[in-house]
Structure formats: structure tokens, C-alpha cells
Image 1 (cartoon, rainbow, N blue to C red):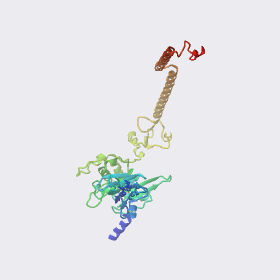
Image 2 (cartoon, rainbow, N blue to C red):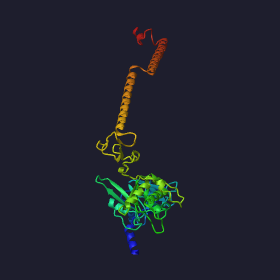
Image 3 (cartoon, rainbow, N blue to C red):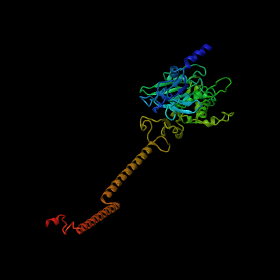
Image 4 (cartoon, helix red, strand yellow):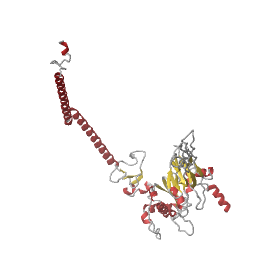
Length: 468
């Protein structure tokens, strides 16, 4: 048994999602007191997000987990200003959260190429430091990996999450018939014919109290934060962890899972969520599924007996549970149209799937005057007429606005504006006043010239030389 456990850990325990590293900035270079030279600054330590990189690879390449930047160059006669030391860049995977040893968050790296400075180099020797260099910053940082995936599989142990991942992707997680088979998160990708990829993360099974870090709950729940969508995997036969714990039905399992996520972080309730009911090949599975669907339709009435001994706040994630439209046939239009993908036909009193590929339902499926979608008080024929009337009014309004704009523009061009006329009069008055002042100055200058004999009676300046 011990040998089997060790072999299991060697095979499946190689995933690393947290790592502590030692970082040190480079020491500055020596200054030159006699010539006043400054030493080069020490290099910095950067964390750079890079794809196809894992924390396990970092630990394998750098067993000591020490990263030290280069020292700055000393000042010399040939180079008074020393060169900066070489920076140390550490490649880390995407989804890394960087925190210091005292728990203060330094930053996060979510996209390829993003950088975070974790250790600054010391300044070189200069006049302020008496030409002595300073040491670089030293600290121990904690790298916490949170998987970035499109879909995260959430469920209790032995619910079938690993089996589902192995069927929809090329991942090969360990599959067994006992709880806690998945000890580390497993990431798989679904490949589509159009080359689109969807990443799916198989998370370790949760237990009741995971939000309070029971059973390493926080270590597992942190990976849910970076997933874009949640897929709850529930065993239709229910769940029971051990003989000492209470048996939970499929409906109680859904409520407990949503509660654990809500109590761990309230922002998780905004994520889109789907429900996958597993192990439908068991006996009486269809009856259990029908009961589960009824309970999900009225969760407030079905959860009254839960958690009577616990005083915990209750929050419920709204799951989009798909129901077949044909289930609402021969009932009522209101119940059918609660689902936006359903179409109600009055003539046949049936509820059917809306033909998405065609804009309007065909007459063979249901006549337009009997087809209703969205609301029960309007059929498709009235809906089309209303849209046509509204579109006509909009086009008429646009035409009227265009005509009015053209009329206003022509009128503004044909009739001068009062402000423009006032400005033109002011310009003309200023021009006349300027001309009058210029004429008065010329008259005064001519009188002065004439007084001193510079001008004769004639305005010709050379007239006094013509008589000699």
C-alpha cells in the first residue's frame, strides 16, 4: 500500500502551483573619488510572463531557486560613468500572482509579455554615497499559480469530473472509483474542426467547509477564480464522503457547491454556470433526474430543510438549466415562452424549438398568425406589421429631418445673417476711420514741409528746382 501511494505521487504529484524564490538586485559599481566618477547601477530582477512555461520547469532548471542580477560596472578613467549591471529575467507561466514574504501582493501576470519588477538594483557609488556602492534589494517572493481556463469542472469527489475531461479532450487524468483521485489540477483542451480551442480545468474535489480551508479548500478553490465559466458536475445518485458524514442528494450537492463558491469569494457568483448531471446509466437515474429538475425549478421550497444546524448566509447561483421545449406542450403559452429558445403555436397548442436558421418559422411548422415568441399577447403577423410601421415612421422621420436641414442650409445661404451684416458694417466703419486718419496725418506732414520750405504750393517735391 505504501509503495502504491509513493508510485501514485511520483506519477500524479508532479504538478506545482506555488513556489517560493529568492531574488536579489545587483550591487552598484564603485565610484571614482578623484575624478568624481559614478559607478553603474546594479541590475534588476524581473518576472516575465511566458507561454509554455511551468513552475515545475523553473524548479528543475534552478534547484536553488535563487535569482541574482548582475553588478554595476566600476567607474574608471576611461569610463567615468559605469555601465548598468545585467538584468535577470525569470520566465513564469501565465496566471501567476506574486506576493512578498509578508503577504503583500506585488502584482499579477495574466498575459504573455507582462513584466513585474521584484528586486531593484543598488545605485552606484557617487558623491551622495561617498562614492561607495549600495547593495541591491533582497526579498523572498511567493509565486502562486491560478490556472487560466475557459471552463472549470467543479464538483464533489468521485463525481466523474476526470472521466468527463478524458472523454472531451486528449488529457489522461487518473480515474478510479474512490474519492480524491485527482490530487492536482489537470488541464485539457478541446480541439474543434475549425481550429478553435477550449481549455478545460479538472479541479480536485471539494468538500463541505472548503471555503474555510477545510481539506486544503483554498488551494483548490483558487483555480476557480481564473476560469471564464463553471461546469458543475453532479452525481445523480448523490454523494457521501464517509460513513460519518451525511448523505447528500443531487439537489443538495448543487446547493452545497454554490454555497462553497459564494462563501469563498462573492465575485464567483457572477460567472456563467452550467450543470452536468453524471452517471445517468445507474438504475432509477431518470426518476432522480426528474425530481432534480423539479427541485431546481423551485429551489426556495426545496432547500428549507437544509442547514438547519448552521447559521450561514445563503447565496444561490442561478444556473441556466436547459429544458426541452416539448415538455411544455399542451400546458400554457406563458410556461413555454419562459425559455427564449421556445416557440408557441396556438393552432396546435404545442411548444417547439425556435427555428434559429430561418428568421421566421415556416408555415408548415406553424402559421405566422398563430406563432408566438417572447410574449403571448402578440403573434408573428402582428409583430411583423408593428415592425413595418415602426420602420416606416423612422424612415419618414429621417426624410423630414433631411428636408428641413436642406431648407435651413439654403435659407442661410440666401439671406444674410444679422450678425454678419453687423460685422460687415463695423469693418467698413473701421476702414473709413483708418483712411481718414491717414489723410489727416498726410495733411499735417505737408503743412510742416511747406512751412520749412520743403514743399512749394505744388505737391510735386522737385518743383522748387525746376525754376532755377
